[in-house]
Length: 387
Image (cartoon, rainbow, N blue to C red; front, side, top):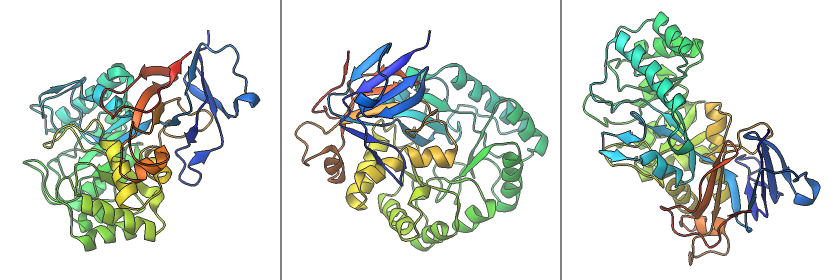
């Protein structure tokens, strides 16, 4: 029997599409975990729903996507000795995470055979186990000396679709990295590069020249993780990269705003995507993507509905995902939220643009409710109800 989800009485529907961030709709329908229709309730077939949610006039958006995490195994991170960090992030509205490398695994291998084995294993264990329902795209090997083209072919055949941060492995030069990134791309794997100063012992400076020479698909934490490049190098990357420009919570806030302003001047806001770069030395940020949206909107003078697109739809398109946009056939991954109680602003969008976080009332992944009132955000003014 098909599962049909109907969410009605939506006050504001955000699409994830930067070219049309707001839809004229109050209802959305999903069947068997995929979006099938949305619009005005009177024009839609809402009968025979297996689950109906009354949104009570609050906002629905595609689930947020964290483009840059460092998972290890399950819902545990040894970097901060913390359990259930992924579940906490779900309560921050994030329904999908993308690994930039399982760098914090104790005893992580650096030899080719070990690197291949761990990449396939990491892809498998997060494919088999989704903490609290969150989709974790993992198995992101680091580039190591000795890797050859056949290793990338083997990893791709094993289900690996990502390359972790270039520069965190033993390959440190642009020429070798460029060759390996080319092999990865040949077999359908997307790559990210570490940008800026060293983050952990064993990593090093990656400057604009190496980023451009390597030619990855994502300029990882262009605002540094933690230390950013000089302003002229950030501007150079914005001007010359067709890749995704990733801004992270664990980076330099001033450099984040410089990236945002430069991308706007270049008409490249659609390339801006968001991550947390956690767990890391600065900890876990369950509300990191929401905080980035509020920061960029308030200090970067970006309409909140556009800033939200950087946290879902932009990432979906740059990362070639099946979630993060309100489109027919996309995964029914949603976050329902409202203006926080007593927060200034006449609406949720105005409140976010004033720098305030919204209150999250529900998350949905693949058409199934995965959390209700958030234990981490400020309390929402209104909450959706399961009818």
